[in-house]
Length: 306
Image 1 (cartoon, rainbow, N blue to C red):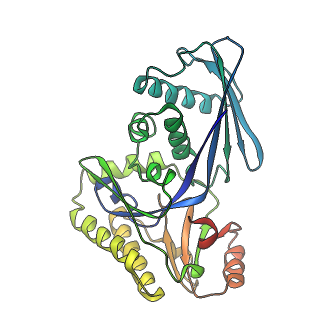
Image 2: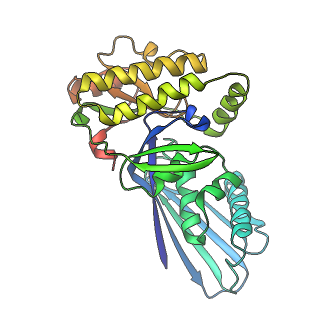
């Protein structure tokens, strides 16, 4: 049996504009997904796939090693997606799965599949590790996106991520905020479709010139890493939100929580998944406030970020 692991992710700065070359600050997480691969003595030409989340069994599929036709599944959408990924892998590495034995793949997600922490990107990373193919190429052939989440999947600390001529540039970021105890990640209660949001933004970007905003967001990203005080950090977050609000022609998330004593910043696709709350309120006050708004999942920075 061989085992692989990939990290989940948060994108602290540069959402959307990272697709256009902006420098983005990305955070690999302690929670991620693991993959175990074993061969079995049966020679039926089959791949067996079992997936689990913290809640238990998630879904199962059986498909052919040759052609990757789905033979059985309790979730055909997920099975079809896996089939497409395996076809892409096979085109990148024709030498995989050449033996006669059947294969058993088991994935274990370490966070709720609805949280948007990277169930898809960790899967791409895991399968790329197993098949020894370029994860960015595999991403481009399947899910699409900027690739920052692929970079986070194998990172050991925060990173600065950007695209240059569509090629990923990854730099380690010395981002260890002294005020990390004042930072919380709050789940909004629904998952946003990253693929849909990426497509929508790319269509908008074709009609607009975001070069000024790209430069500003890149500057903010670098400043966030160097921010030595909580107030400076919060000011940068507020400025970032204002810029992205103009780009997306959407109100900032803070407009939904105007009475919150602190700064709130969207993470990743606006309108879903998690947001960052930066505040000098006590942990008890933070939990009480967001619980009163119906938000029950609140993660502390130091507990979740690598």
